[in-house]
Image (cartoon, rainbow, N blue to C red):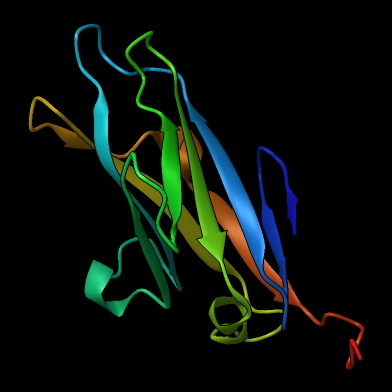
Length: 128
């Protein structure tokens, strides 16, 4: 998996972790939940996402919120397994984004989490 400010590149038949730093958590609040979605278009409804992950401060199979952002900056890690990458077509451009829920009840999508996302062939067919 490769990440940069402008793209996410996933490898088919491979799992990966996608980290995010959310640097604008409002003073006096923390992140209680976060979602990661991959869709053909961000305007598509969330229930049509090809990949959808929900994380909390505790460890889950989808990842975790490793820092809730009490200092103003939060850290998130989303875990994608090989089935997630395999749900996407090689070479097709998708869009991904993160939405967070604050303990105040406010939910928002930091615009810098919106990224073009592609999947490529793993290049390796066997591991044993």
